[in-house]
Length: 435
Image (cartoon, rainbow, N blue to C red; front, side, top):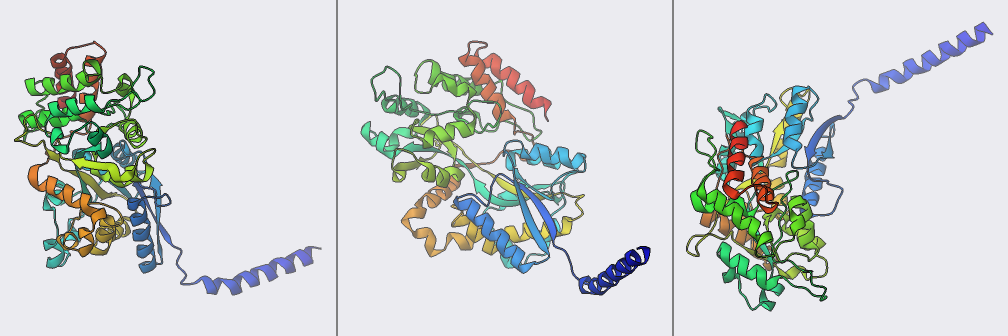
C-alpha cells in the first residue's frame, strides 16, 4: 500500500510539473480599488459614464481591473485619510472640494503633478476650468485631479410656479423666494396640513450640504474665511441669513419642521417625490431628479441662479466639484495614477459631459454640436451661472463641516435654544478650531 501511495504521489507531482510550465509568464490581473459615491451597476448618467470609462481602461490594460466600492459621499474623504493613516486605504478615493484642505494636511495623497506635466500642450490648453486644478494644488503638489465641476442652483417646479401666477423673475431675491414659496405651499386634500411645501431644506448635521443660509451669507459679506483661514461667521450677515432660514419654518411656514432632522439626501428625495416646490440643490443631481420624479412631469424641472438680497446682484455660483486622489503608499500607486489619468482624458471627459450630464470641463466639449440640443440646455445654463457669479472658497481652509455648523445654528434657532447671533458665535468657534 505504501508503494501505491508513493507511486500516486509521484505521478501527481509529475503531472503538476508538466502543468507548471504553462503558467510561466502568465500574469494575474491586479485590482485597483476605488472609493466613490457612484455605483457603475446602477442606472444614471454619471453611473453609465463611469462604467464605460472603466470598461475602456480594462480593455486597454488587460492585466488591470478596477473594483468600485461605493461610499457615503459626506464621510468618504475623512475615511480615506483615516485609512491612509492606518495603512488600509483604497488605491483611489474621490474627494469633494470642501475636503481638499483635509486631504492636503494629511500624508495620504500621491502627487499627481507629474501626470499633468506629461500632458501635451493641447490638453493643458483645453481645460475649461483651470481654477479647479489650482484649488487642488497645495504646497506645489497636485493632491487630486478634477473630474467634474458643480455648483448649487435653485431647482423649482415650473408647473407650480406658473399655477401660482409667477415667473422665474420672482426668484431673483431671497425675499422673493419666500413670497413664491408661500404661493406654492398647498394643502391639496383639505386636512389642514400642506402636501406640497414651498421650499425644501435638509438641516441635519450628518450627510449635509449647502443650504440657503450659507449662500445668503456669502451674498451679504463675501467669503466665510479670509486668506489665513480665519472664520467670519459671527457676523450680522451670517446671523441675518440663519434667522431668514429658520423663519422659513417658524414664521412663513413654507418648510416643514421635520427639516431640522433631514439629511440633504432626504430632502432631495422629497423634492423628487413632489413634496417640495423649490430647493437649493447641486446641479449634479439634475439627471437623478428627472429620473426619479414621481407624480410630476420631469420636463417641469426648472433651474434658477442663486438669489441675492437685492435683484441687481445675483447670489454666488459656489464652485464645487469632485476630484480623484491616489493613495501615496499604495503598492499599486502607479497603476492608480494611470487610471486617474484615463478617467480625466478627453474621451472620458466627453462621457462625464454626456451621458453624465455634467458641465463640460474641456473647451472642445463645450463647442460640440450635442451641447446645442434642447435636452442639454440646462448645462449651458449652469455654465452661464459660473460665468456670471462664480465664487470659490479658499481650498486650503477646512470648510467642509462649516456647512454642518450652519445647519446646527439653524436647528438651535428653530428649537428656541439660542438666538441667531449666539448660535453663529458657536459656529465660528467650531469652524476656527478645525483650521
